[in-house]
Image (cartoon, rainbow, N blue to C red; front, side, top):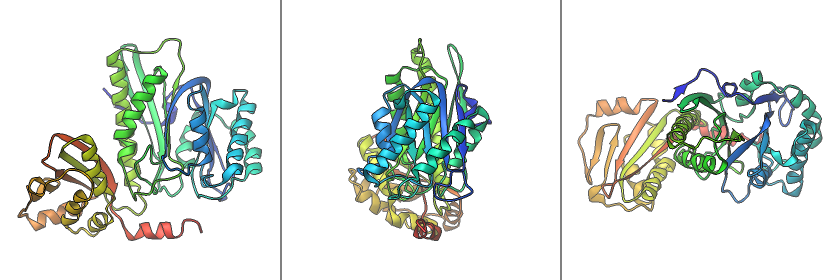
Length: 397
């Protein structure tokens, strides 16, 4: 059974944390952070499929299979499209952290988020590393969710516990994301910590499965970042837990945590006024179900209609039709919550007053039945408001 704990990252023993104001782009805000374990960890990570990845993503891909001691994180600057200099800067910073912490240089990962195409202030950040290391403490865990934010309006973290045959274990996570959220490997920055001793290959399989059904099934604007990173750390152990029931309990707890983080991100979508749950059933296969769900979730016409509380289900049908999924008009049904608007290809009568009430809600579920098979998929998305335009028209200035 999964139990949600009252705290965040500090609920998992074995890790220390630090976050400071470095002035990377702005003054007076936390923008330089670190998660550290004195004992080496198994790690697994999923990263953007954007072909212009940040230097931090490149370093993580090179090092993720090593025993990992820590993650160096900066916000406000993505260090993407910065060429060899940007890559060298990330290498220099992680090596300096490793030197001062007396660990292998390949045991420090890095994550960067913020504006694209601007070099990191290398010397400024190098000079801040002693302060960053000096502030490492378990009690500073609460600073990490704030330090990694960019356009987020609130920090995001959660911790859970679960039972196993050897006792209780914990998983905690934090994430940032509000815009440039689109599926393809992680869609944001997310850092997950656990004290559950699990073998590396099994950790990778479970983490990948869980990400694909959670953080990789959300979209806000269909715009994939250059910096998308999700990393999980678990202590290296002389004896790993391998019982099937224990591994299933771990996966259930991880899914619960990732689902909650996914909801937090979508609720905080740039300018969003609604969280939309898109549920597709009756697809020929899972791939078709995902195609239809994503197509609806990223349709600008669907998103703007729902912002305006307009019950224009024709836009949903249109998005299904061009999604690439197998679809037959005479089998397609569309519901807003439990209200049928289209039943097996025929427009349905509905109570406009009740539908108006549904459309005014902060959270709405749209159910689509393709009537083609038994596969299903779910996506989380948002509406599209005037504020989204305002936020993104002023981002670099």
